[in-house]
Length: 245
Image 1 (spheres, rainbow, N blue to C red):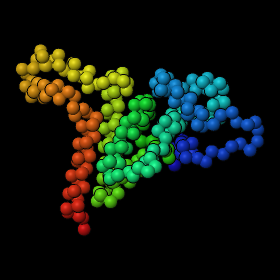
Image 2 (image 1 turned 30 degrees about the horizontal axis):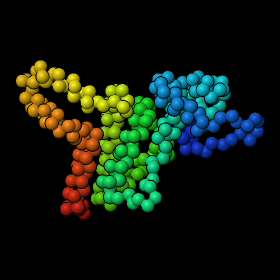
Image 3 (image 1 turned 180 degrees about the vertical axis):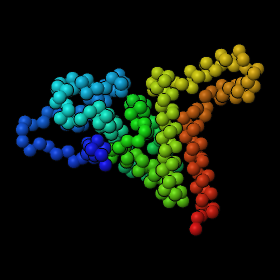
Image 4 (image 1 turned 60 degrees about the vertical axis):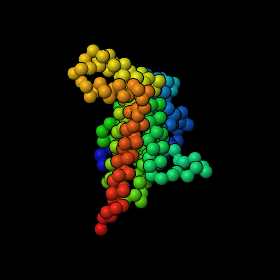
């Protein structure tokens, strides 16, 4: 493990020893992460910098470097704080079967990404994950315990669901954030094109007319989520019918 990787693990997983001597620390990692999140939520990830965070906290940039060595580590702390531990089922409410658990999990993750859309850009590619973020993967994989799926398949199912969440969040962000409606906006654009050129696209024209008549039923988020869960159910049923030796 190289030094930079080890430092990222230490920041995210601890321990975080306090200095035995000297003045009482004025900052801590959660407070630093919150300051970065406030900037990213309001202005975007590109506007987060060590200087901006230091100014928000009322300290010098050099003082901030005593706690966080650079922007990469700062963003990792922000991601971990923004995502946090996966919420546990409410007391007195049993989690239900695997399908109910994964559906609830995916909707909670969607709400999180819509609230902190900058997390999309900050969670691309191989990187060290913190304990809170890893708890989300743990919850999804454990929901499929006892279904007959292999460990690799359970992890792939979680990745597939995350991909759907990310795609919907990106569309919502591109249409103006959570308040936007990308499907409605696409429908307006597509409607104009079909009215002008529909004769060249008969299948698309018929499908669009059906979608208009259904008043927006089977929208992309819920439709995609249910089809992913249907596919998992079919695979689970197939495994149950033909168990592996």
